[in-house]
Amino acid sequence: FIIQVYQQFNYDKAVFGIWSENTMAETGSDLKVEIRNGILRYRIPATCFTLFAIFYYWDRFLHQRRLKYFLLFAIFCVSIYLTLTRQLIAITLIGIALLPIFSNRTSLPKKIGYMILTIGVLAVIYNYSDVLFGDLIEKTQEQSGEDNIRNYSFAYYFDATTKNWYKFLLGSGHQSPEIAYGAQFNFWPDDVGFMGEWHFFGLLWLILYVYILYSILIKNYRRVPNYIKIFVFVTFLDCFMIFPYRNSYEFYLWASILYICDLHINNSPLALNYERKRH
Image (cartoon, rainbow, N blue to C red; front, side, top):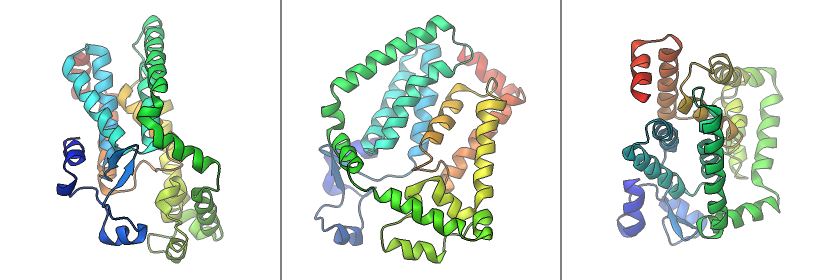
């Protein structure tokens, strides 16, 4: 958040999330960053931590009403907005709206109250959507009215992955010839979410992900903390475009999530102490 805000006002000193000289040459741009909605868009990675923090502090604020939790929640929300990534902003709003409903211990009247409050906030956001999301909405409308390269990329990798049984089950790895060929047409595995992961690691990798979803959202629904459930749910909604874990830092986050789930499922003293403090 600090880096994003600082670089907004100090463009000449920006060093994080900027385009390389090769990218600038390919795009024909004199700027080292993209501009969306009148804001500089720095492509700083690890937004998964920011998204996780949003739901963690939103959950804490709903239960304890402390100003510090709301401030941290607001800071991380601004950070997600400054990524200017449409699907990330969308799933963040969905998660914020749904988190109170996912709660096991929130009474029905409170859930209704949260829903009314959320509807009111979303109405305000919609009223000022031209200011907040003008370019993003326009870009989405343009892409919906023309052939989206993601559709071609999805079809390309589906065909490349399912034509052989061993690629279908075990994947083709990160150095497959299909990736090098697809790059000529801007077909990138990372742009097609779970389909790209299927191409890399095979169907067994996706079956493992489905098992994780089942374990957290169904089998242990009442034992897992709300902020984890909502994080897992909204990242699933976006897995068609951005798979939840693709990089080393995302592996670390998900390993941490599964560890926290294990503490709560097995009634660890650490988990019980957290629940006492939260309430």
